[in-house]
Image 1: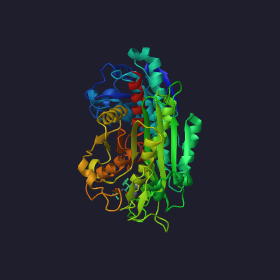
Image 2 (image 1 turned 90 degrees about the vertical axis):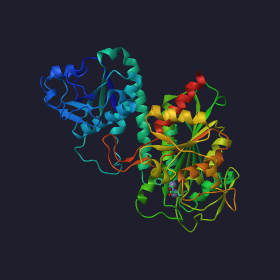
Image 3 (image 1 turned 45 degrees about the vertical axis):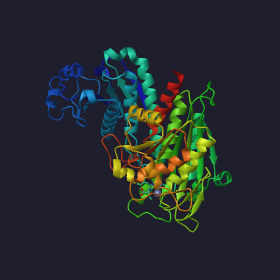
Image 4 (image 1 turned 60 degrees about the horizontal axis):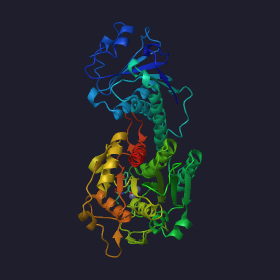
Length: 504
Ligand code: BES
Ligand code: ZN
Ligand code: ZN
């Protein structure tokens, strides 16, 4: 995507379309709309109050634009002005891009409204356009006549024209975030016959080489030597070798051994059949996205490598395929985790916590993490509790929980806390081993988190259960159905926030 900035009159921008946001109760006479009303006498009043009420989701394309250089004027309902934040700006920008691209628009201008900060506003628009245009049809032959938007122009109002340099920074940030989100979406969209654990490791490695990160990959033999009995058990029923992927970002000019070190750990189950406790066939195909947490980690590390916050960050992905076979692990098996704790397997479909526990313990013991965030499509129960709107957030350290919540809010990704009282931990006691991998039938997301908690010990830790938010069942105005890339922006924001807190 080529992104330019236009500081002259938006009416003189010669693109296929120029888009303007319209707030509720705005009229063609409001200061920001007046220039367009003046250029197109009588046209705006024909849609205002009917097709265009400024409500979120309203969108009108006008063609009789002889008073403008652009071929079309797109009016985009933006809702109430005081509720229009960066997330809304990103979503509405994505919506315009999707609508415009379907109409054959290849060059799009978007007018910034000046009640938001120019830097994050430019980032939100750019991010929205690029993620909005993402096409999940990875393996469909493109139709010969399909076009997409290849050029975006941000039009600054006269009041904003002094901020051009800041707007450019925002554009670059938006591009970086969107590319990271789309990268994570592609990994999640890839089917499991293409994206095996080894392929996931190769893609992480290729990204690391391109972006200047260090990448280490542990295969079956290395993990066996290290004693990662839980991660290995999950992968042992599959012909695909499990992999532990580590991506390390060390900022230049800082001593990586001092100060906070953030570890971000992702569940990377490239396909979850449930194993011997096999899942029902309905929608089992979707379980290719059970590596979305890992994908978010890899995507976020790409963005971190580009944005260069002054703090050490390690990304870990625990990748395996959960299959039923003659070599599979079985209910009742006792596993020896990397941490030293023994685990009784009650259900082979509760495999995410098993691969994660070895990665978490590794991040804590060998990786020197001072803070650990994990992202995992861990439980169906979180969808029962929170639906597809918010990720479940659980953790041990109230200050770190607060940081992650703040980062998520700033990144425009929604999370909601669930409690982790001691009593829930009682449900994970085993009669034969230190812990079992299943609680009772209630509070499944919390007992799953309790299991993970046993492996991070006293390192401040937050867990995001993204099972409900990592996948969209149907197209939305602002996003294609399929993988969402949830978590990428929050991780990046968290790293930057922690780096800033350390410098100050
Ligand atoms: N990968 C699933 C969780 C999941 C479910 C993710 C639906 C996305 C959509 C996980 O490994 C799993 O199977 N969890 C079980 C846990 C149960 C066996 C305790 C579940 O949620 O049913
Ligand atoms: Zn499972
Ligand atoms: Zn799973």
